[in-house]
Length: 307
Image (cartoon, rainbow, N blue to C red):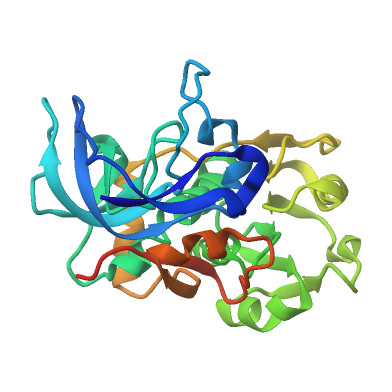
């Protein structure tokens, strides 16, 4: 099969290439999925799990990408809950070969059934962004109706879904980001937008929850905005400055089949729309990883196979 592989950590995206690899094996409780569309995180070439397995052993050449949408073609021993020929989407394990390949082996529990009326490119944009937004807002942030949430990066892949989910539960949403994201964030329903390059973040006042995807100085300054009993949540880095009378949480997204199905239902009835900026073929994946690759308008999705 064809797959994108990385061999040299120091080379970055320049070390990625389209390669022939053996067909993956379905271990116990696995399925093999024919990948139709895949998502990736630009920074994953810096993750230790991209280069080593759970025991710390080198596992290059590695296949990057951890989001997928496709069709089950093989079941491993003991696998239940899915069937051959079924459309699915979900997350691949961080320490195993990923989804920028024609086929990939995935734990069945990390996948959810995909309704026939959702395109694979849309589904591939949901797993990391959608689960991160949900878990950050509700599982860790405990957001409820009537509260105010500050969403950093409100026009991006994670932030745009967080805005939509927060609005759905009746929260007041303040969004931040670059000037180029203002119109999209306002269209999604933010009540106020702050251009972090030219406007003062501190002017937003107190909020119940800060949901951060940026880190650094923006994360540090956000701690002072959390009102008593509120929460600062980040997926970018562990907070080094904590709210004076509140909680600070750093988390890594976790697979959740039931929540994936719930997110897909929201997409079907128009309550949730992933931000997709471009769809590129598999052989263009290395260029999509490059630091200078355009990312305006949303996530870049890799189309691996046609329906």
